[in-house]
Image 1 (cartoon, rainbow over the protein chains, first blue to last red):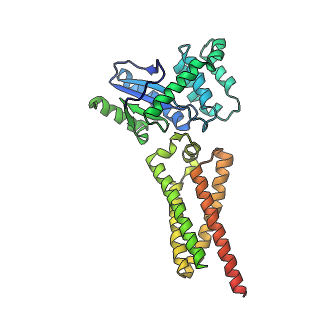
Image 2: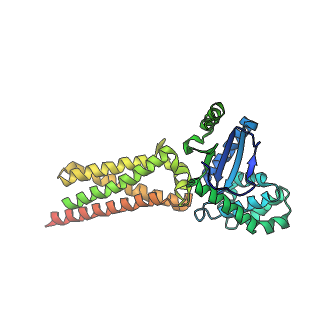
Image 3: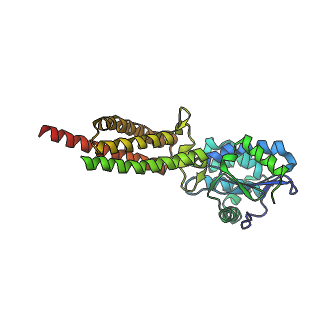
Length: 182
Length: 141
């Protein structure tokens, strides 16, 4: 599925020439996304340069009260070239912040931890540039029929949710590499 | 009284449809995906959504099907069905209270389909209380 373009440049891990291109629409506050995070990391390690991973913001507002703040924090880190570090920290500490009333100081703590310029981060986190990126990713997701998170596309085709378990996703990726469908 | 049993059978069908929907969502894995009307994903992906390896929604579907069968038989005058209906609905009522407590205070999220099921169980309980009241008043006459 093609869909409208998302935020440019997208957050990508892995080479553009990778035969398997996986695009995830995720919400940092969504528990299944948090569970999927280590699975995807593991797949990236296993498949190396064969696999390219793209992350798209899809905060489910208002269902998840801090999802937008988390997406903004990650995007603000992205403006300083540290998206993936922030992405990992936010997911790995999901249970530490999701029930807090005010998450901003927590995300600022992560920003310090990964060595961001805090003043710039504080400006960026509520900037139009960050909002626009989240909006564009959401627009892309919507155009591709994303209804929930995590939704994963492999070379443009949606991977069924039940295939996102590590043992199943591994097989899906292996099959894709063996017989890439056009 | 016959009409009330028939009404209980009808109401239980709504519960059965709701529970079947949740069972299918659970089995296919869709229920654990987060959606814009979230809450269900948190509730249904929690450890409380499964009892002894069986999805709670499936147990709910079996319970509603039993209520439907017993209420239908009761409407046709089967006394044993009437006797069995009371403990079944009472158990469902207590389980429902427990599940609402879990959603409110443990998981801290509400799933609208689970709340619909709770409402249906409450309606069934009210119907049975009415039947009991009618039964008592008929006895005393």
